[in-house]
Image (cartoon, rainbow, N blue to C red):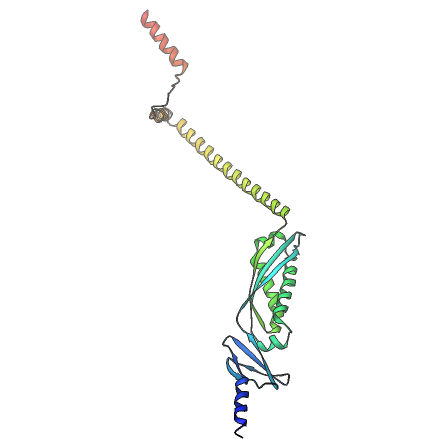
Length: 248
């Protein structure tokens, strides 16, 4: 009996398995699922029992670049990131062979299909909506595998070089169009103000003379300017007649 005690102690020591706080353990007995093990030290008897640990932390999976064609037949290259975690460790191990590989493959297929349902303008302008659509479709299927998708983000949308040049030209033309519109609106407002000012000056006695004197004063403030003041011909003729009458 005494000889068995060391053997029992050795068996117990090699039977101890540690399940970390962020993990769940699945214990199998004679190849059949027995129970789920919570975090801590657990006994797994060699030969007749086995176990498998599942990480429950959120994982970020980089979906490789996928070549897709939009609804308006524009080829694009899209990649994304999927954030998911194992919500049910039992399903993740028993319902599918390799849940990591499975969700990666399904995400790639779904991303190509969703991109094919939208136009290029919708894809570029509404990335969040496209990502939400991918998330819904992936989560619908992956839920049966014990997985929970928390978010899908589109990282980049690459276009062919000729398409990038076309979009750049279109954006430049749009900017020029807005600049011309703004300039024309400014000129229209300025002309309306000038017309109103001219109307006020012409209808108010002495206003035009005061404006003329003000302009002369503004010009004369800079000594480097040479001011040429034009006198109406009628005034010159009247002045000449006055001088001639005085001589007579």
